[in-house]
Image (cartoon, rainbow, N blue to C red; front, side, top):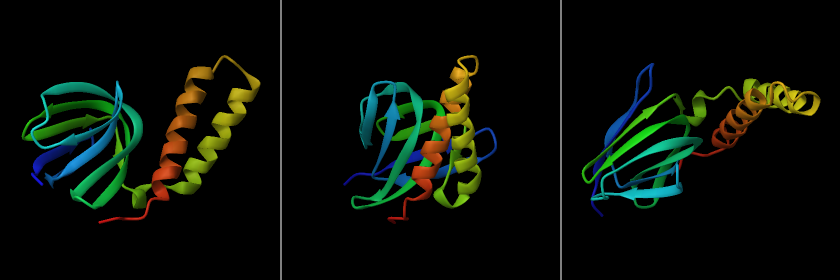
Amino acid sequence: MSTYRLLIITPERVFYDGEINRIVLKGAEGNMAILANHTPLMTTLALSELKIYSDPKKFRSATLLGGFAKIEPEKVVILADAAEWPEEIDVERALKAKEMAEATLKKSDQDLVWAQAALRRAIVRIEVSKTKDNR
């Protein structure tokens, strides 16, 4: 299987830079698997889990908190608002954020957009934190 370069940059750091077989991400059109020699494409990225395959059967999960992806045949560049490996996630903090967002959703429509976004971030972080390294 062919490989290509993946570069993930956040405002704080270069999160990932290496050769991979494929990635699975959630773009504007839904979930996408990107292989080498993909047709050029630009897409916004949803708050979701990102799977990075270093070989056909092994992957590493990360939380991707929005951004953009520029997909080219030999390279994918992701500019992410934030990205986290499972071991970087503070699960206790994410659980508290989830509880606060759920409580806000129950009592008021004023903070609806904030609470929905906070709830989605917390849920994605909690799910990715459960992911065992599959490298």
